[in-house]
Length: 461
Ligand SMILES: Cc1cc2nc3c(=O)[nH]c(=O)nc-3n(C[C@H](O)[C@H](O)[C@H](O)COP(=O)(O)OP(=O)(O)OC[C@H]3O[C@@H](n4cnc5c(N)ncnc54)[C@H](O)[C@@H]3O)c2cc1C
Image (tube, rainbow, N blue to C red; front, top):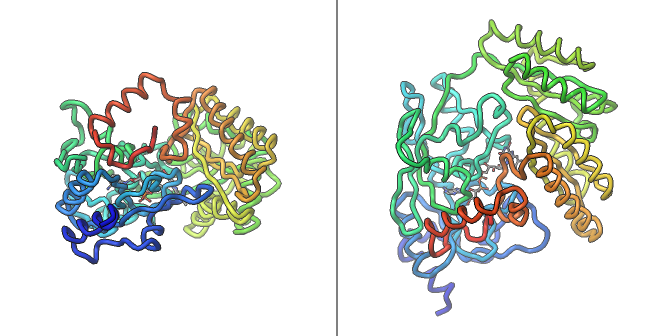
């Protein structure tokens, strides 16, 4: 019997047959993610839909016996190849472990299985007047397991932080099948090393998350959004800095460059000013009584920095129109060429203006036309680059531009991911932003937690 057949037989003998997929077509569907790499990727040997912790432990045992990788998978929407299957293996699909286990409104915590969709966590919290802020923009499909593993962030990270700020405790099946608890059900925890933080952002390489206890906060009473246009990037960034200096704390300060404005307007018309150099999108929230104060201050600051066409969402339609424009940029960009790539670089805010300008120069040098959007309150920029992979010259240029953008980011004191993670797409660039000693310790941690290298191998480094 071939190795693959013996693996499938072991899986089918230990799990309900309906939970195991092994045909080439089925496995292919779960071997790719939203990273959209050039060329064919290797295909998983099997896909297993797990329903409980015991099944996860059984698979870990089988994987160790066969010395075969396990690749956890939520919705497969990460954009860095974090759940691609470069050396085959068993894809652990969590879509059936999608239950909210408990919500404690007094403690303001929620305990969930890893396959719960992030938006469902938000909805459950909202029913109790509570809020879960770190929702990636694709929260309607992405899972909490994937978000924790990538340490994802929502647009509101400027005010509320990222996923890591909301994870209190994780239950993890380790590479040897043991069960580890990382934290506690408390808001603070200074007992021992912070394993919760270590697992958050570990991209499925250190352990398999089987449940998570998350912190919730009170639901903001009101949310509004402002949009303002600028003739220069410098002015827009100066406006961002002034907002922060004046101690106003919007939940989001986002950015769209001219190309992004024009591309969105072309494919998803939203009444945007396409002659302007860039726009800021600023969301404010809080108590009703506080909103006017924030709004007036922000509008004054914008005007001081020569903003024009300042719009304020006085109703829900207007709120949705502005946000839809910002969120459509990737989809609009994808209409320009057969492929689109998105990236995620971040610098200290003082260098943001240089980052934007120099990314534009690098792309111009390589004949690429990116749409630049980003969470500029955090110092983060997403260059979205339309490209035709079949055009060898364009692809070569894209690779050169990407490498120069990462080098530039490092020179400006930044790093190559603020929220998307490293996966396989960025691993060759990690030494450019992480000190060699730190990288060695990371490898040692991986080796200690997963000596047989079965958990999502060859990702991150
Ligand atoms: C249109 C679009 C918009 C996006 N917007 C944002 C955004 O605003 N902010 C942002 O940060 N990201 C964003 N992303 C990236 C992506 O959505 C996030 O990284 C997302 O949180 C991944 O969730 P997922 O369920 O799809 O995880 P997957 O892609 O399935 O997996 C991601 C990683 O998690 C691991 N994993 C999954 N489940 C487990 C588990 N139970 N235990 C251990 N490891 C596990 C996988 O092995 C993999 O390494 C966006 C992506 C797209 C396509």
